[in-house]
Image 1 (cartoon, one colour):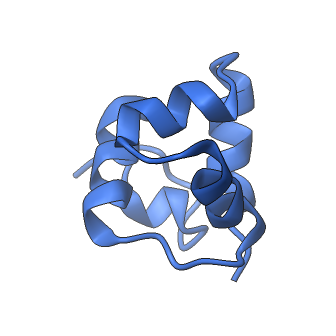
Image 2 (cartoon, rainbow, N blue to C red):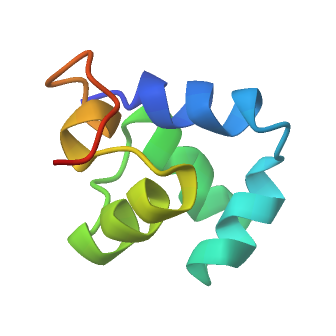
Length: 70
């Protein structure tokens, strides 16, 4: 599964992979594998990304077009 939306959110926020990786406490190459779908994203990282971008996890996963958190 490719996580295009986490890449889009990162780019929209003008962040580098290194910056997001630091936010998650991981190496840049691990985060890169998340974006490309080569590694599954742990739930704790999805939660942290959703909180950071202020969107729902479903939005990050591409399950909805609605960014709002309910």
